[in-house]
Length: 257
Image (cartoon, rainbow, N blue to C red):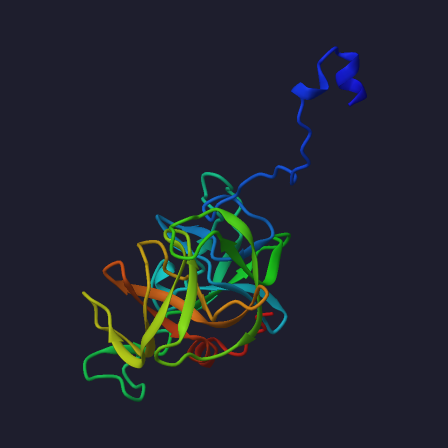
């Protein structure tokens, strides 16, 4: 209070209170480094969500949807930016693995093209920093906040059962959670011949641009089990995701934490 006295200000007129440091408030739609799951990504003409970071062999990578590429199914070297090409013109990575959709897959309905996951893998560009196992944590859940307040850490992979509460983080609706309603559903995509085999449905908030969102179990001391990635929705209250086992069946073994 010596400074106050020197200025001639009565001590009774001054309140000194220690507070937490003031930090920038980043959102899922801002440029964030190191890169974590749940952030906005941009590919030519469209926006999606980065699902999760992974190492395939020795290649640093991230996983998002197959339909978040220049062509769903098939590898065309789609470039990605985070958050936008107009904000950061240096691409963060390039699509390197996106299996084609096929007719001759077990359980594929006649006349349809099938896969077991709507997933693709992009290789990170040299010098791009990322947090293996990290998923952005926003305030919430279920309040539409996009403000990042921390990071969830993937410490396991797993499956989900009907009634289990699961979570997702996406660039449009942030962190939402709800119960699994159906598992292993062969799911057609409106306006196409595509059927995604053995998918999981969740009763929770979703919006356009959330495609690719990481889906995970209930946090415990900030740790979560990775369950898969979201790829579609019915209205704003139901979404469908591809389980992690299906993703690795198609993209090969992935180190996710």
